[in-house]
Length: 298
Ligand code: PMP
Image (tube, rainbow, N blue to C red; front, top):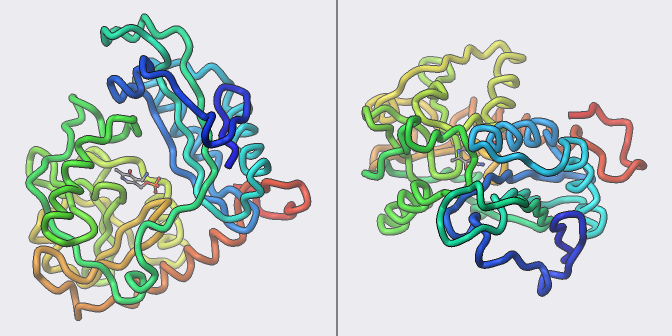
C-alpha cells in the first residue's frame, strides 16, 4: 500500500507521523471517509467540501487547495490501483509542542490512505441489524459540534463500547435533550405511514453525504421526506428503520432496544432504497482514470 503524506508517497511501513502531532496528542484535526466504486470516487466533491468546512470550523488552514486535495485522492487511488475501496483522508493540526495551543503547530499534515472496508457482514444487509439506544449523550453542538468531522471521535467510541457490551453492532445516540441524533458512524432514518423521517441536523448529527443522497433519491420517487425531531418512542413504533453512511451504505435495522421494527424484517421502502443506492454508486462519481470517463460526474 502506498500512502500519501504531504505531497509524497510512502510504503505502509514508512508512512509515519510525529508523536508530537496534535492530531495524535489532542485529536486535533479533521477527516473524511470516502468510497470508490468501479473506478470512480463517489461524491468526491461533497466530501472535499465537508472536509474544508470541518477544517474552517476548527480554524485549521489546509495547506492545499480543494483541487489539489482532490488530485491527491485520485492519485493515491491510481498508485494503489484501487477501483473499489475505501479512502481515508486526514488533515492533522501538525507537529506542535506538548501544550495544546494550536498556534504552535505551523504545518498541518494531509494524509490519504486508499484501502478497503467491510463494516458489517453481508448477511446483515439481508436480515437487518439490531441496535440499541445508549446512555452516552451525543456531543452538544456548543462543545464539539457533531457537524465537524473531527479526529476526536471519543464520543462515538464510548457509544460503540456500549453497543459492544450489549452484543449489538451499532448504537443510537440521543442528544442532551433526549432526542435522537445519530449512530456512532451513521445517520438514522425511519419510515412511518409512508413518510421517511430523519432527525434535523441541529439535533446533533453529521451532515451525512449518504443521508443527502437518500433524501434526493426519495424525492425523485415522490416518497415524502421530513426532517423531524424524533424520540425513542418514534423509533419503537416505526414501520421501517435504516442507517446511512459512506462505509455502511444503507443498512436495514430490524430491532431497537429489544422491540422488533415493523415485521422484524427489512421493509419494502428500505429494500428499494438499498437497491437504488447501489445502482447510483456504481454509475456515478469522479473517474480515477481518464478511460473510466463518460459518467455523470458527482
Ligand atoms: N455520522 C457519523 C458520526 C459518521 O461518522 C458518519 C460517517 N462518516 C456518518 C454519520 C455518515 O456520513 P456519510 O454518509 O457522509 O458517510
